[in-house]
Length: 210
Image (cartoon, rainbow, N blue to C red; front, side, top):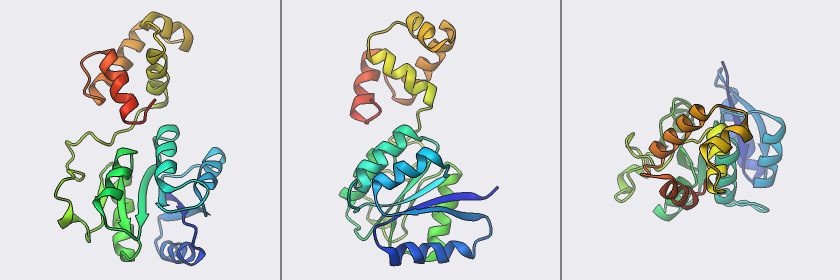
């Protein structure tokens, strides 16, 4: 199955360059090329993508805010941040909002392809130009739970928990059993490393999931 890639950058030359890179890769297909964050969200409303290559600095809606919205609404879309900048602060912000990868715009075509394949396999990827500078970010460690996905159903349960509903009430609202709600809550507690519902809601707010 093809890996569907959505490109987002406000420079047409860069968009054209990325499109030409992927034309030579048999199982990677560019499904869209847009120029700002709002166009990303509009595209995903009507179309599917596996990977979003996302410029950090864009008009209308910047990459950080776009990443936050995409990872919340479309958790199956893997976001790879694109930047001219190699500061750790940019990487930290994108990681906090759910990015799975971080590339510099002058990375090679081979590295871009490698990053796409890595994130589609559930791994994380950082430009080789940056890896030796990541002294304070354990981004590549599999055990690091800074970045994880919350399913649509888990998101619904989480939002109702934050509104004070009990497991029984949540089950009735979502038309699922009490036991299914308990299972979702258990998974959420584990993902957020929370001891109880109050701590879960606090951490979900901090990480932008509420």
